[in-house]
Length: 390
Image (cartoon, rainbow, N blue to C red):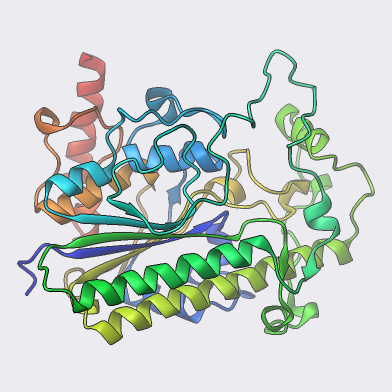
């Protein structure tokens, strides 16, 4: 059975910081489905995004390239259609590739190698969110503001809930369709939710899973951290003034974030239930990832757009217990490693530079899944030397 090419399901949450999950040591959040995937899988303790912003991070993940190479610098930079992604390579290996949910592709190409998008996107594909770095102090009207924190708490319904519910529905429907068709081709399904991305608003049943007094406050308050120019600029841009927030508002925003995590966990659980019900689970590798983290008030900062731990560190869990024993991996890894990892999982060997359509900055994590860090160090050294030769 394991000689077959595995199916791959990637469960992606937006703005999910690793430190908010109990699998990474958090004592408040309630995510039993992610916890189970972590207990049975390989957990990367030191996984990071390559850019703490949606579109650049996702482009790095899909191309296996740093943004200095692929040119996707911000949320209005075009993700060029000529950039090969892991979907292109897996399709060459016989895979069908599906996307359900958000990816934030800027530009006319809204597939980037996926055979099919099961939903539309929730974020714009145009270039309206272009920053003007000639005037770095000018605040543009589309920039984050503090309303997500000030108005945090209970909601009845949001467009993000509408979107994510649809993404889950169509992802499950595709799994049912795959299970009942007469087709032996393997598949990759990426389901990408917008939660727990701000605004911090979630229905009452998810909030009620937590007692308000149990919600923790930031470990490092603004006054505890030394000042730096970038953090000060971020506070000005999202209009965080001295004395604007008190502990009650901070706790309420974090409470809503934990509630959104509970929602995300429920949806990931539905996908696992569907894999089990359809008989696809045994041949399917599950990955849990995020595009970047969330500061949640640490150091007096919110959202992302910096390389502090809250914004840059992400969960990365690979669940394939029939192939890889559960373990914790301490080596530093990042989202650019996803493409070569997916390639090796699908092909049975690492990507060879001569057969690729573009250079890679990442390297396969399969040796770490197998408990063999020596090989990954060797291939990383080769890739660095190859870049210098270019």
